[in-house]
Length: 452
Image 1 (cartoon, rainbow, N blue to C red):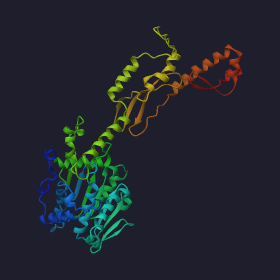
Image 2 (image 1 turned 30 degrees about the vertical axis):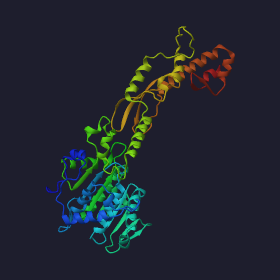
Image 3 (image 1 turned 180 degrees about the vertical axis):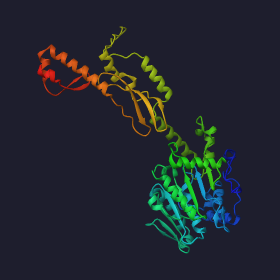
Image 4 (image 1 turned 60 degrees about the horizontal axis):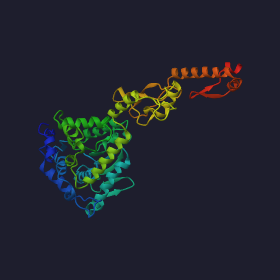
């Protein structure tokens, strides 16, 4: 495996210079040339004029195709590189690329009854790649004679070899025990949300043990949320292979900015966009990226209305600012000191903590949860501070402590009894069974006041 080392230690320099991210490999020339020749002749069914892939595909793609087919040893009948991990932003021809590679593999395959599958989190997502592969065959008269397309079964069959290209859902019950020659996984970051995603990859890799000439291609975009599950582990493994930390029969092609360029909003710079969008000017244009950037920034501002700095400022300002009472003198007259009940009443309506942009201060946390301290306006005439533990994916629900509730009810009940002892009218009102409001609380009439 020393000659088939897929590490690309100078990937940052290659990325900045616009060169291929595929390292120099000892490919088998006949297999490399044949695979690339057929790939370039395939037509793109959803473009005007039905151009060939060789005319519209970017030069970045051809070394990947050469590595996939040129790593097959025709004498040993085994593939020296069996796994390929391709990461790129969306709208860079990911679906067309994957479909054309699978059709190319179906044409070149010499194993009778060979099985090729398209796998995605749902059949709908995998169906997009199948539709592209079907269109590639239908627009070419020679390929239309060579293959039988069954739309209702989502299957393409080679009439001579009996090999098939089929869409399958990402489910262990469907793929268990399979012996696929070639597998294409689309959008691994979405597949990672499934609870059995790790088991699915185990089953797919198990097929490579029975098919030494087989391959597994993962084509995915980066996730909006931080990577998790199998996507996180597979991405990290691909990075380790690229950086020379691991040596596996895996070819990683990762179009991502280096960390020192991505930090401090470096990803917003237009000069860096062509580096990670290899198909810029072909399937994606700069205007689309600009709209996506504006939408992403706007969505981020809506989901988090204030920054941590503004949160800290509003919190300290709310503590130092005087609480206005409900009755204020106009003109240059001095303000009357507000009573306790007035302060609690105004806090429910005027306090900065009651607004939508109330300050949330993260006190401590982990990857799955955070302890958040929030000033919540009390519903019993008080403004208690509560510490709430909320999941990063769940909505925080403030909980009123039982002690605060009992104290508020006790105070309100005492006020009820004092008012009932002052006048017969209030005594009659308090003896009536039911509920009465006092200081914003819903209380049940006391049995002692009923006997009075």
